[in-house]
Amino acid sequence: MSELWAQLQFFLPGWLDLLQIAFVAFLLFRLLLIIQRTRAMQILLGVLLIAVAYLLSQFLRLALIEYLLSTLLSYGAIAALVVFQPELRTALSRLGQSRLLRIVSPMPENQVIDEIVHGVSELARKKTGAIIALEREVGLDEYAQTGSRERVGVSAAMLQTIFTPGTPLHDGAVIIVGAEIRAAGAILPLTQYAVTDKTLGTRHRAAIGLSEETDALVIVVSEESAKISVALRGRLDRDVNATRLREILGGTLPERPATFAPAPNRV
Image (cartoon, rainbow, N blue to C red; front, side, top):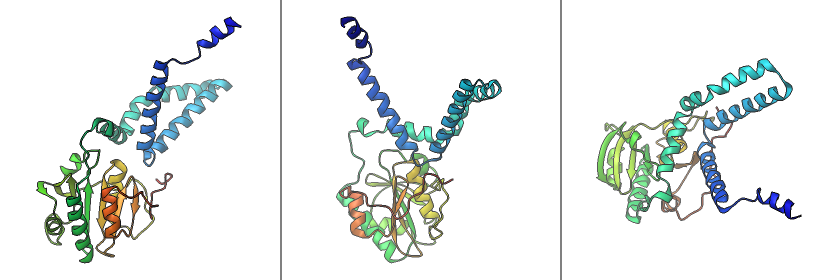
């Protein structure tokens, strides 16, 4: 009995083993959170399917298929670096700017929230189209470089001035970092998924696209309907009023079901 227990002791993990398992599980969990609404998830499922087919070919001794799949998998690592480049960049960015590594919270203070809510409400009242991205954990500097670099304090008057029709910067996005406007007229990436709702214009698609690639909170004002929408984590919350917007910016309200969300199987 003692010999059997001694053999079973080999399979009992020590505290270092448990620490390694927890660390690997955390990394896998973060990776799945990042790619769950992107094309990377579909590609990953395809790679897993090829791996299963390879194991089956070995089991059934299908030499030709096994050779072809082994050759494909041999170059898969290089191909993955090319195909997953946007997702890898996002993952590394999020890892480097994780809450565990940050001390200062990126969320704006109450005064900044008041200015944003007031400015957005006035833009909606005047039916002036606008798109405003608020940086959170993932930096938006690469998107800010596509527009006019600014460094001015956030104010309702400044937001209304930037998005006034006919001005050079009104078609692009404003990027806000903390209490400052860091860029205006910035170009944001469109969503990777097909959007069946034809009422959603380019601004809404860009807002969803940025929220898919980063953790930014993006506010959109529709010039057709004068309605306010908020995109976060690839989901679009439409017809948001001033009270709801203030609560979202302050982080005091749990998310309600979005009225639009790109389905995982969209291409």
